[in-house]
Image (cartoon, rainbow, N blue to C red):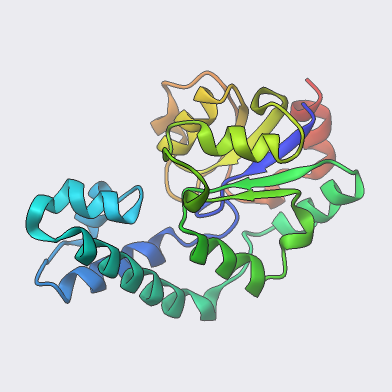
Length: 220
């Protein structure tokens, strides 16, 4: 292993319920009433693809783009007062940077949300490459975003360790031939039984001291 790739939403920041609330509120404006349980179960992926998948021709392509943008505006408004890294991640990033381990971001989030987190938390200096949904032709679980994030560090994806939080993200890492640690902000360990590339589950990064990561997972 030579580099580390981080997913963002649910992995670096605990924001998935904020996304769910933003979706619920935005859909309400268009007469669509979904419970939070339905949102959690069905609303995942790229925004315009979500709207097409769930609602077919109810919205024109232009309306899908507009709703997607409005949802992200609502998300950022809701999340800004609570915006912070997941516990222990700041110390982990500092230690990895001090050890000269290259790091990248491979996120399925739209560019405005990736920039929102990076700029408000002043994180850009940690990462050699940053990729999001605006940089790829195919979204997760297609491994394109991890291939590109790795290439931005001068590496192959198989040379990178991935931090993820979701089932789709775990499948993406598997498809990219990356060993993985799952942050259980959204899903529980038993939901990942089908994967054999996951090395550890953590609630947050305080449970993974950097030296333990290097010695037990990164160098194996």
